Length: 191
Image 1: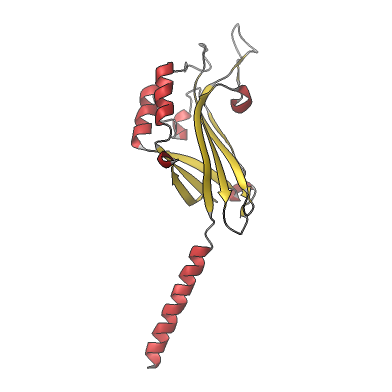
Image 2: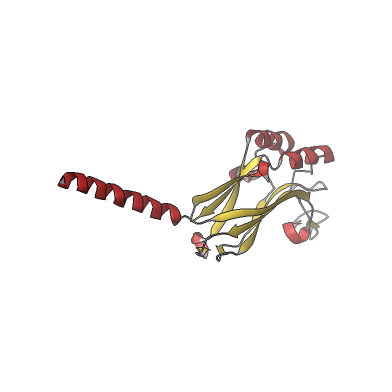
């Protein structure tokens, strides 16, 4: 009889611990998603030309530009400054990876493939979300520039290729991270 009570007590404590652990996971909701191909110095910056007859001029890249609104639907603050902040990343599905490789020549979502390409990528984000607060997050992946320059050997793909990449851009998953640990994922095909 004592053993049976002990087993029931241990089982109850285990369930209570499991429920407490599940309820402490941050709650976030993807409120809005947009994606576009842009050429905007205010959002993307510019590449300064440092040599040749156009030295001192700037090239504005064309980029695949994602913008997300994420809401903290829980009752606790999520994130902090530094390495403890909220971050996001795109995990492309196979179709988007194939489009990227066909159009740009490499998987633009694998950031290490940008090394020595002359192209870049960037992001902006709110590292902290208070309860019931929404934050704006952006990711951009440069696709090339409109005029030839040895510093950026990638010319912008054709309008047809850019349209295809833009059409496939939501064939991916958005992953929300806190301290490098996944706390949510959203299938962008449903947004």
